[in-house]
Length: 364
Image (cartoon, one colour):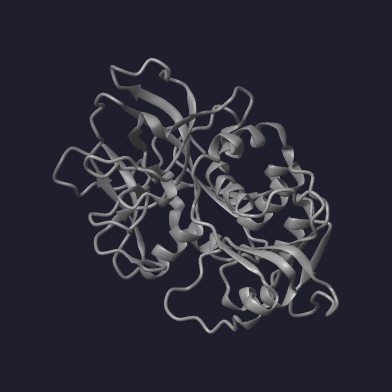
């Protein structure tokens, strides 16, 4: 990517001084590039020059329909919560973050209730917010912009030697780790099925291997996806539609990472008696036709997994020591080509994790 701002040469129509550009999703779907003012640097705040932003499934949902699950966009919203970059400025009261530091952003913004404590993690705080989410009104803008200003508590320092490109996986890897944390302890010898080999599913595979789990089967309907999971360390891959687990095979733990209702139904068939299913993928909103009799007859534990809490530090350490993560990033697009990047990211037959690049990467 050439030096300079990614939107250089684009016409500016804003009435205020143009500080920076941002990628937004609109009500009803569609994305655009708009002018937004830079935030001032106040105490407790850090401004980051964004280098990479990963396109997540929720970004795709907002871009395609203006909705993500039960959340619906009512006003243009800046997308993006998988953000890494370089510190540009810091508040006067901050002494452990410096200009030039390479950082990742924790997208959770907990807001304790008046007179009370959170009592829960970032991901379960009833009054918390999340970058690039329409879960609150006004919506919480994300980080797909030249610069993003965040709370000091959201900063996660990146170790020397970790490329910003690989570090862009810190947020989705944290989501994968949180899903694994919903499983019972002592899973090293477990027989595990990861249902869905998208970026999150493949990250789950690498994280399981890091924990010493070896018996990992991965299923998907897309050949490219299961091939990526195989390179990530899956012992066995199954391309659904042409094959499936033997009728006699069952699994101690199933991590459903596709968000497919059909996949959850299959998981209830494939999980062993007394086994566990972790629902990591976001299921469709509304009523779902899922036969749950086996949940009782097989005494299955079904656990949900919502975003993540404290896993980002662990994720960054894991990224710094394992080259396998480079398999997950398939494409990098200049942010000025956001429309093309979103189109590619929505096609799992041609891509895995797609990154948007907003500024030059000094680690490449």
